[in-house]
Amino acid sequence: MAHVATPPAPTAPPHRRRAWRDILVGWSFILPNFVGFALFTLLPMLAAFALAFLDWDSYSTPEWVGLENFQQLWADENFHVALRNTLYYAAGHIPLTLVAALGLAIALNRKLRGVAFFRTAAFFPYITSLVAVAIVWNTLFNPTAGPVNQVLEALGVASPPKWVASTDWAMPSVIITSVWRDMGYYMVLYLAGLQTIPKEYYEAARVDGASAWQRFWNITLPCLRPTTFFVIVMLTIQSFKVLDLIVVMTDGGPGRSTLVLAQLVYREGITEGKFGYSSAVALVLFVIVLTVTVVQFRINERRSAR
Image 1 (cartoon, rainbow, N blue to C red):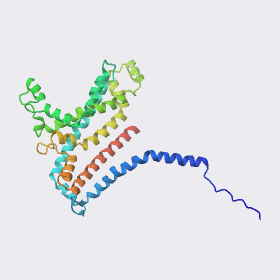
Image 2: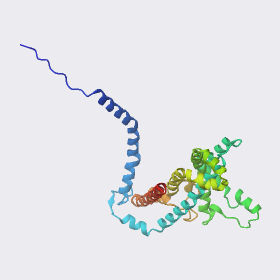
Image 3: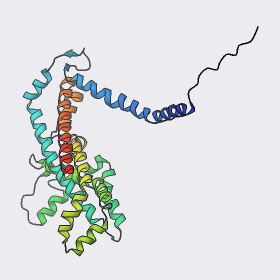
């Protein structure tokens, strides 16, 4: 009986196996990041969105209440105060930090003796413990024994501000502290942007007789537009979710003068146990930040298209 040879099983071409191997290697690098994001960010965020429509105090069974939390939020005076204070903080923190960081970057983008030391000194507050920063600035702003008021009195100011002890000056005190802490970080971003501008632009402008202000307005600012856009977006997000500095410096006081939305979320959820209502406030805060960010992207796209 003649033996019939069995044909070998078909195998994938070598280039296809190599492509699959590259895909698996790529997934092995990014999969831990995706899993971590899904477990610790995406799922808690979706759960918080769902909680906004529930009544839950972590002890009883969650109860569906629909839009009741949002109706309560609309009538809650604390929410309106916190929203106004958050907008107040953002309106002060964003432009002041932007101007301070840009001015610092321009000043330290020159060949100066000890420029590395000054850059490090400007960046140092950003990596300093936030609690230490808050305690130091609370001491500086002390109404009776603080160095700031002592200097103002020496300059002839009869009634210096009471800073963190005053309902009118508490928020400006927090804004000044946060600008001082954050400007070093954004200075580094602006320094990187300044060093990408070709020097030929400035040399050509000098030959044409442009003044320093004209060179800054027509060369520096337009070339820094991508950096400025990134800084504004980051400052906006950071300003709307400010919590730690306010908790340490004023804890929302005096009264409710520095109560912000992120702190209201913490108080209602962690302190009062109203996780549904707290999630509703958090959802509103998320929508505000998302809307502002989308508007900023649209404005930047229109300006870039010109």
